[in-house]
Amino acid sequence: MTDRAEVPSSLIGQGAHFHGKLSFLGAVRIEGFMEGEVQSEGTLIVAEGGVVRGTVHVGTLVITGGLVDATVRATVSVELHPPGRLQGEVETPALHIERGGVFHGTSHMPDQA
Image (tube, rainbow, N blue to C red; front, side, top):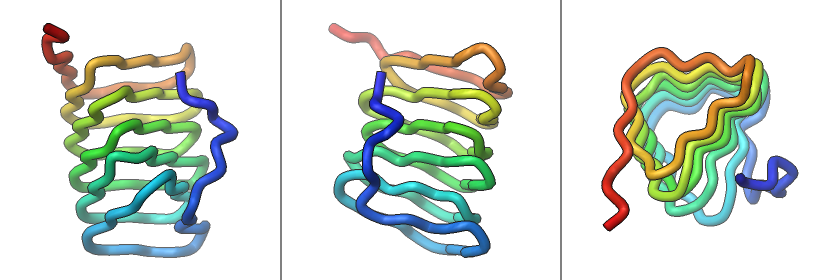
């Protein structure tokens, strides 16, 4: 599991609204609103108050209290921690949902041949 204390390289803070394509290295924490496409091999952290809508293609997705309403492809893992919510299609080799996290959607785990 990812270290939830990982220090993000960037932050979309509370009250911020971002529309478009977000690409980054390392880790980004979202506490505001993001709509569009997220593309990275790094870690996207959606914290309490954060909302992400659109498509998310990342290495690791960690939802610690926000909402992700998206088509998600994570090459490493997806972690859903309470009171986080995830809606949509998810493709990842590792999906971890803690008690209290809410997932509505479909998941697909590719073969690890």
